[in-house]
Every structure is written in C-alpha cells, then in structure tokens.
Length: 373
Image 1 (cartoon, one colour):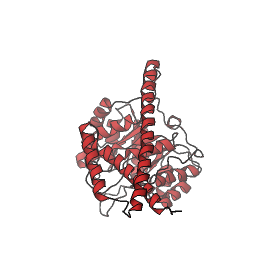
Image 2 (image 1 turned 90 degrees about the vertical axis):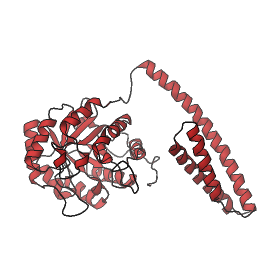
Image 3 (image 1 turned 180 degrees about the vertical axis):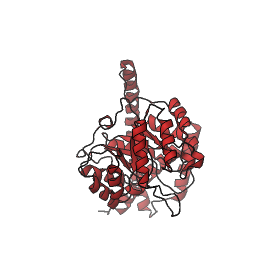
Image 4 (image 1 turned 120 degrees about the vertical axis):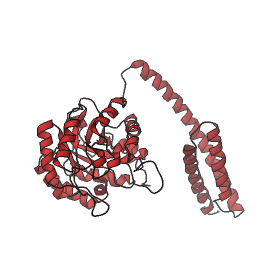
C-alpha cells in the first residue's frame, strides 16, 4: 500500500470552500443522477423525479463511460450534453459529468456543464490528468477528482495538484473506494483510512463520498453512506435511475429516485463541531483520559523495544535467525484469542500485532547488523 504521507505539507495548494462554488447552506452536498445518460427520456424523467427532493443540488450523468472491455455501453457521447442542458433549463439543476480527456472537458464546458469530475480510471494516468488541466487552464470551473482505482494516495494528491496548478481552486475529492483482490461484500474496498489521511493532509479540501461505487449493491448503500457521514465527509454522490432494472450500466448499485428520497430521509447528518459548552467539557474530559492511556501505551512500547533489543543481542550471540515462524504464529493466536475474550476486534488486534512484529524484525535486524567493536 502507498507509503504514508502524514508529515507532508501541502499549504501551497489554493482551495476554495465548497459553499463558494455551489449553493449549499448546510453540508453535505448531495449529488445524484444516473450512472449513464442512456436516452433523453431516461435522463429527463430521472431529473424530474429527483427535482422533487430539495436536498439534491447537483445532477450527475455519465456521458462517456470508460469500460473494461469493448462492446459494452460506453455512453452516448456529445448528444447527452444536450439532454443535460434541458435538465438545467427545466429543473434548475446544476450539472456534472465525467471527463476522461481534454476533448471531453472542452465539449462539456461548451455545453454549459457546471462541474467536471475526473474518474478513477483517469486519475491513475498523470498524462490524461495533465491534458485535462491544460484544457481548463484559465477557466473558472469546479472539478471533482475521484481516487485512483488502486490505493495510491500520492497519485490521488498528484491529480489534485495538477488541476490546482492550472488555476482551478474550486476542488473536491471523491472517495469511491479501491480495487482489490479477494472476497468482499463491497465492489470497491472503502479503505477509510486513506480518506482520513487525505483529509488530514488537505484539511481545506472538500471530500465527497460515492457510496454507490463502494457498495456495488443498492442494499449496502445506506451503511456506507452513513459511515462516510459519521467520518465527516462534505457530500455524497449517489447514482439514481428512473428504472434501475433497465439500466445499461451498474444496474445493481442504482437507486430508484423514490428509494433515494427514503434513504436521504433516514440518514443521520452529524455535525463536525458543537457549540454546547457541556458537551465540549465532557468531550475534553474523555480526551484527557485517552491522552493518559496513550502516554502509558507509548511508555510500554518503549519497554517492549528494550526487550526486543535484548532478544536481538541474544540471538546474535547464538547465531539464531531473527524471524521465528512458530513464535510469530503463537503471538497471533494467543493475542487474537485474548482480544476475543475481552470483546475486542480480532482483526484490529491482528493488525496491531503485525505492526509490532514488523518493528520487532527491524530492530533485531539492526542489532544483528551492528558490528562488534
């Protein structure tokens, strides 16, 4: 996975707040519309129904669809931009489309699209991102940048930098999950920790979550959307089709507009801060307890490292390898069992053990490689 960038500074980026480029008195920004614009009737009927949901402020539709294999639905192209013009005129929506190259960007702007977004398959290619950046240089248009397909935080930030260097300050990142190998209930692995790291590195950058592409199935969208809101995202992009059963792409993850209305009605929208003094005092009290526990943990880790160094010296004296498979298996087994007994997450403790073991191996290797004077 991409090396952490927590200590990197990005103060040179110039980014405007979300409410400076789209009318949104109260976050989050809600973006909705079909995965792909298929017919004029489908687009207008979807927009008509979504216009009855006041919290939706931006209408999305894929005009060009980058597909893995040919002969699948790859979008209707430029004619779809005319349909989006009708959506703006009839239903007073601002519109957004995905652009994968400079030509797409030029056509979208020519037809009055309000916001561009760069998809995951394009973010992964710096050449394509740079071409788009060159095409929109000097134009005052917002751009949303989806994370690259694979978990590469530097690549995501690099795309943001390229667009920002073109003079675009109305920016947002879109977290749509990451491709991975293995079984999962999700279409794309959320990897929330990367989204949190991005927010840590670029605190001024709005982050929007796309629970449709993370979920891959409409029944999972609620939980993903709620978790994203709990983590403080600035908006949601949710796919909605007037008749998902007939959708030409991603049918299983699109919601019928009335279902989307019900979903938005039951979602909880937590605030990032509270002005309640009693709440703030109680929260600070909890945080003080956490600080104290963390101090204890760090001191215990220091003691653990001292013992690890002694183990390394002892192994070196007896010409024994640093890595001991049976001992590592024993640590994983016993710590996981204890975690479950105490009601802790086995997965969390296993990840913690992995980090501790990696540091143990590093320290012992240093001891082994140290020359004896």
